[in-house]
Amino acid sequence: MLGMRLSGNGAVCSPTSALTMPTFIRCPDSMKALVLICPVRAMVCLLWNPTAPRYVSRLVVGGLIAFCILGLAVPPPPGVAQPIAHNNLRDRPNLVFLLVDDATCEQIKAMPFTRRYFERNGIVFENAYVSTALCCPSRAVLLTGKFAHNTGLYFGRDPDNPDRGRGGVVGFNALGYDMANLAVWLQQAGYRTGLVGKYLNGYEDLSLGVPPGWDEWNALADTAFSYYDYDMSINGRRVHYGYHEQDYSTDVTRDHAVRFLSANDDRPFFLWTSFVAPHSPAQEAPRHAGTLSELNIDLGPAFNETDVSDKPTWVRNLPLMDDFTQTLYLARYRKALACLLAVDEAVEAMINCLRNREQLENTLIIFMSDNGFSFGTHRHVTKTSPFNEDSNVPFMASFPRIVSSPRIDKDNFVMNVDVATTFLAAAGVRADTDGIDLLPVLREPGRVLRDAALLEARSLDATDDHCRDQPDCSRPSYSGIVTRSHKYVEYVNGERELYDRQRDPFELLNVYDLTDPTLVSQLAQRLRALKDL
Image 1: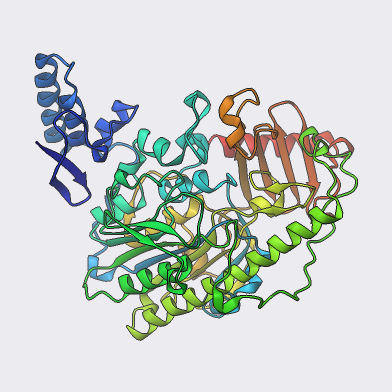
Image 2: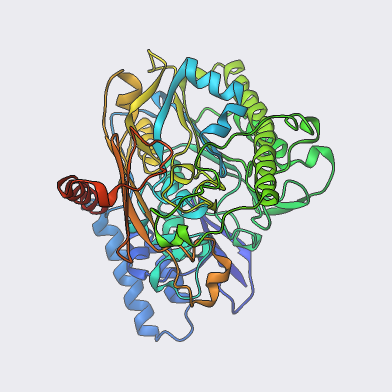
């Protein structure tokens, strides 16, 4: 039997079994959302259901046809992108997104070309934050332009009990976001779209196929974040990479990206390039082996913090590291730095490709990390916390056509939620997002659009069996706000954190109990306003 595979290019027939719905047409949990986003896909899902009465199927078909006809005369529902009529396709810029995995602001110093390029040709944002400091939730924010409290995507994997939130590619698809995201909207607007590298956590099942919205798909299978011995989906075809030097995943990602940029195609393009590096277990390229072995690593006064009596319970419960453990994590940090050397070379190759093809001037490039990582600061090892090491990330942008004054921006608070909004604005596409358009900041030195950032994360109940697979079970759910002067965090168990960012940049002293209640009240009020976005 022939089943229908839906993609951004329309319907393509592919062989499937007679009784099993193809995974390409997974029916989300929320059919209401699906009907709004893609009526055709909703119709297929309902018609495929063998238990549905025939009159129901006919009613649904008739209703959806009417919906489509009437939809021509009414505004689109939220989340559906609309091209801006005055922006011609030929005038639209190319869009390139460069994403690293678990990189901190300090670690970007190991990428001299990348840092130098953006300092000389764009803007380096010092106050850049991810709202949820965990891989998949942050990537979902990047793709949808919506905060986790609006998407419901809080976890790296879809939990056994999804009532407290969803996660991973399974949760992303179940909520219908595979049909409503940056790639889908840009493809609908006439862009040639491509993904190279890591997609969403849980994409190890390559039978999930190529999601809608992508013309070129070169996605790593998310198994063990391997730098060797891994699989990729090359436009839906499984390809294995082994242990040869040329199989190093950062170099493979680079080569696919340069190939995409080199294609002879008149359409503007959008390229999402996502490196596994420097995610643990970090492994440098053979050519960089031992390069940083003698580098002295200093993680600052918060590393293995001795006195955590002022911190919330979850931090106080963390053990003080012994000498062996400290040495171990310093070595891991050094490995992560060495891992980024190949990423720096990849960025240089991509920039040179754009320059040689005379496309760099008309290309908006954004570089960032999906979250940071703690290598023992405040005794904490992993991510998901509100501390700077996890939530404050490198964020740089260049667009030579409009950036007249390259600079380091210390005033604007930019976030991962702004990436989709900014790309869409550059492309002349409107969509319902929570972010701000950063193009005015790129154009106008001194322009400030946001002066605070939202932090939020959810923790699974410690009794949940799935909790053993989560890095954050001992840390309660929280929400927080970062301003120029303070960071304020509220935990669901009633504990609070407040840090004076000017006097205490390393967040060593929680001054919540020492601070004027009026200031605390003002910060709490601002936090509530951000959570209402």
